Length: 66
Image (spheres, rainbow, N blue to C red):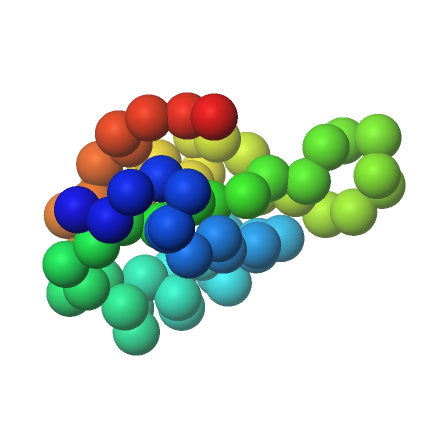
């Protein structure tokens, strides 16, 4: 597992974008930081529940938050 500060950060705005990233990268050995936009930015934002649902479908689990 890669150290948190060295992990790649992923910014997605939809469940479809996150699903596409997972489909292409689900077999990676290291983790990633999924970055959520704050609601106040006005940008489309993936919900935490959507993120977890998609990740679990690819065998990924939520490990920690920062």
